[in-house]
Amino acid sequence: MAGTNTNKSIAGKICMVTGANSGIGKVTALELAGLGATVALVCRSRDKGEDAIREIKQKTGSGSLDLMVADLSSQAEIRRLAEEFQNKHDRLDVLVNNAGVFLRERSVTRDGIETTFAVNHLAYFLLTNLLLEAIKLSAPARIVSVSSRAHTSATIDFDDLQGEHQYGGWSAYCKSKLANILFTYELARRVGDSGVTANCLHPGVIATGLLRTLPKFLELPLKLFLSTPEKGAETSVYLAASPEVERVTGKYFVKKRAVASSPESQDVETARRLWEVSERLTCLNPG
Image 1: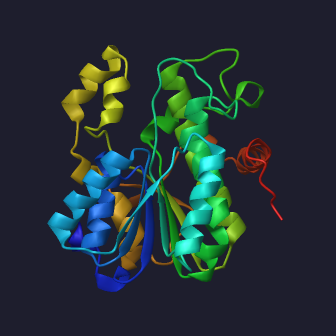
Image 2: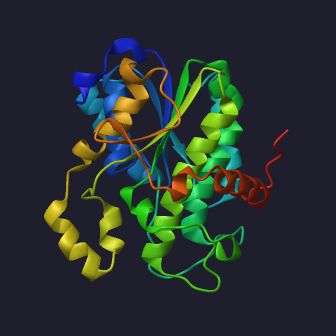
């Protein structure tokens, strides 16, 4: 368990973890449940989600687990998820945006959005905004978004944001992880002193299902540096539960330490523009 840097202050709080049926997401949900939190596990597959619930119950003894099934590539399902959650719960203390994909070939969602951008960035953006009032009502509350050191290889090209002219799986993934950081920094600016913190992180290079979709030339060397999902979840749990970061916001963490992200990720105008484009792509009413 990640208990060395957390305490029981999260006990009784309500947390949501996306992509919680496997890998880092499942370990994050398990750790938070073990600390006494009520955890909503957002999973794409009901069967895998039920397996994860059984495993977490067995390991932690927690009875405060809620399976929520949603395909985060669909904006309609994200909206349904947010509504379903708010019908069940009157607050949300911690949101962990964790779900992600890596796709070698370009595809589009039912909303007509390039899939990597839709799942890895727009799902974070839309779900967070739909739940933001519930999160603010729970202040002090936390929003944690899983990014990647891969963001350092990317820039945001607003003329080809969805890879319609030139697409590469690794490039699309890196851009989506850069978008996670730009989103986090802009979110932190927008929520201001509301009592809500927004931070993001690099979990390390982790042995998860995502790795199987990488090109062989990347997969083989990466295997030399793999960490376990348990190790990868440590920073997510730290940001979700540790009293040490209760008032820390707008930061990028690696190994539970705030570090500088890429210069591109710190461009305020790029972050503002990406937010506005994301609002249009999700038909989100900012008012």
